[in-house]
Length: 208
Figure 1 (cartoon, helix red, strand yellow):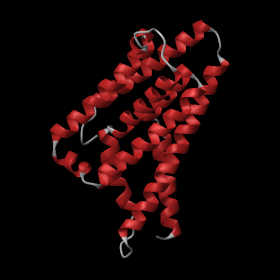
Figure 2 (cartoon, rainbow, N blue to C red):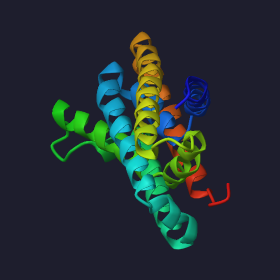
Figure 3 (cartoon, rainbow, N blue to C red):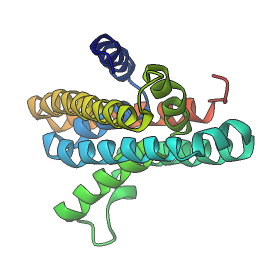
């Protein structure tokens, strides 16, 4: 692979990643709601979710979704409803707390990881995106698999860095605002953003 092709891929991937989608909305919302302690499990979930979406895409699920409106719709609604559920959890915290009334730190970290993973991995647009995006930078005449591995690894690295920076910024904002009233306002703004991302996801179509 020529260096100029690789640099063009890095630039294009960077532009795509900087534009906030459902995953970044989730990272920002949860980091604002819970602080910097949420960033690491969220980023791990994003990385594994992107890796899963990329693997599913290259394994043929992306092509299957392009041919099947039903499959696309099922994945779309699962992701949309999950985002709305997470948003409602920030508006009404009791929905996301265990019956004992206290959520253990380990369980909360696992919850952050699961939410980021499922939102990222089950986003049908992400799966279709990898099918359409990565092959554009694979140079004919060279073995395809090593190129896919390099491009895929680079994209995952950039996606992880992007989510980390967004999360740290949002978590820092949370830490700076200590007043309970302000935090409740931030939680509700974050919850509204997640619900909006869910509605946006539900409105997606295969051609959009």
